[in-house]
Amino acid sequence: MIPLDKQERYRDIYRSLRPGYEDSVALYARLVGRYVTPQTTVLDAGCGRGGVIELYWEKVKQAVGLDADLPSLMEHRCLEGLVRGDLERLPFPSVCFDLILCSWLMEHLTTPGVVFEELARVLRPGGHLVLLAPNVWNYVTLGQRLAPRRFHKWLTRRIYGRDEKDTFPLAYRANTRRALDSKLRRVGLVNEEFHFVGDPSYVAGNDLLFRLAVWWERITDWGPLRHTKVHLVASYVKVLRQV
Image 1 (tube, rainbow, N blue to C red):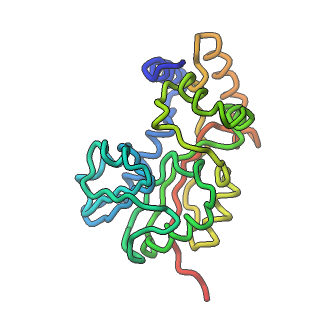
Image 2: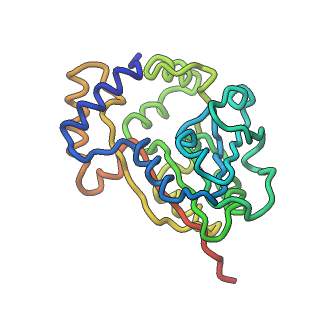
């Protein structure tokens, strides 16, 4: 198991080796903050127990968290406006949110097209969807996908120390830039910013593995291999569809 404090220690080392490096969560938080104002209404889709919304919920007009997992909602760390619901049938009126957050959600969607249609429906024109997701082409994700499904929870617990209650089925049907751009464009969401973010700490079980991971990050900084970085961070804006 790679404890979170060990991951963060290696991440700090990597920051010292790469001045200006921004990990995926920090970049995601910065993109979210760009669209936050005192008049913003926010939906945290698949909110879990918290996350980046904890930085901003007191700075917006309204923040709502939606999740299908009741235990996660009951243990949410900040929001009072919590809804247990289905992403395929959002219990909200159309065009009611200015900003939608999606972190660690895309990989679980079995019908991403349906979910994206619903997210677009409740988003106001000019509103933004900001996402953070694992990249299906990264070696960490590929290894997880190749493992038999019955081992997914065990691997997640052993490698990352995550409780089984926080481990949900994986689908990876919208975890590439091409898939996201295509599926979101169909529902009127156009990409504004897209980042492929590396992070060697994910496999840093020891110093040797960390050095190997840092070497691989340098190789994948260039050319097509850049598209194999471990995380995707992006923002999309809703535009009026042409009739």
